Image 1 (cartoon, rainbow, N blue to C red):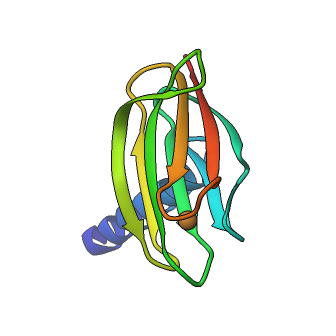
Image 2: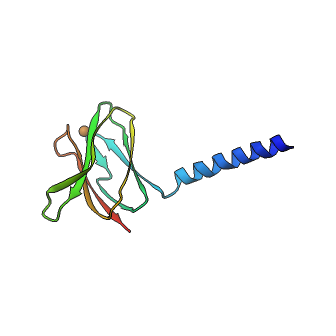
Image 3: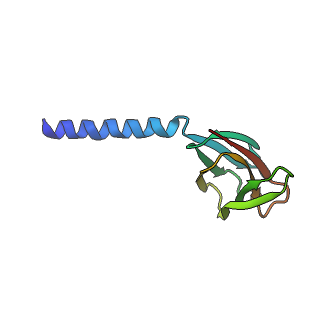
Amino acid sequence: MKKTTQLLGIFLGAVWLNLAAAGNDVVNVEELDIEYAPDAITLQLGQTLHLVNKDPFFHNSRISVLKADGSEGTVVMKAKKELPNDETDFKFTKTGKYKIRCMVHDGMTAVVTVTK
Ligand SMILES: [Cu+2]
């Protein structure tokens, strides 16, 4: 009986984790055909940006602060080589606008708006 209870606890824990992962805590962005899809992303503080490389070659995404004049400021996530099917998670710590840029594909960018 004790073992059954333990197993049930583990099972319920796994279900809860799955539900949490499938909920609103994650915002998915695909890297496909040398574009970010979507390329305009809004997420709330606390949510995780989840990048998935769906292309058969690598990307190298960097995230920086997007300034009012359109230029890029402080880098908040250093460029990271993402092989096919690689998944990258990033959590923003401040509200504002950010730019995701692939360092190997000119013009492959996305804008992220982080709200409260
Ligand atoms: Cu790329």
